[in-house]
Length: 134
Ligand code: 5GP
Ligand code: ZN
Image 1: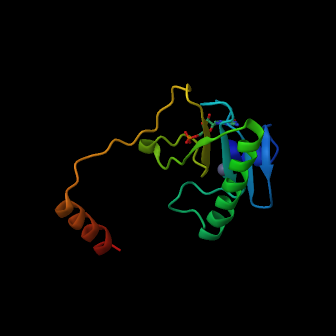
Image 2: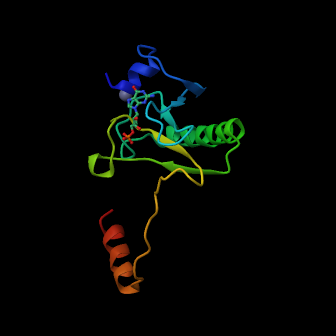
């Protein structure tokens, strides 16, 4: 059983921020920033590619709720929402989860996505490749 399933089954403890029928949110054991929280479906799905769409809806409702719990509780103004799928993308726990990472002006963290040169021919070809492979 995976570590998040053990938390959900109360086999190992967590610092629970929020819970409903289908979703639990708890503090990440390794706090990237003050208040770093994971929002997790109670049912085990490995990643976004197998996540049930109805659960995804419930999960994102919880993301909004928990974001506002953190905002109020920590007087936040800024927050990153991150989800890693697969080892190359940095996923280390194979139970789908969404990171809520509160941001502070001096936190030293960066999730910056660098801008690249715009090429419309490449964009058109890329879109064709994506849509032709469905
Ligand atoms: P990932 O790297 O898969 O996107 O995120 C996994 C996260 O789970 C990491 O940030 C890691 O600190 C957290 N984590 C791993 N094991 C535990 C645990 O036992 N309890 C809690 N609360 N967080 C955990
Ligand atoms: Zn699991």
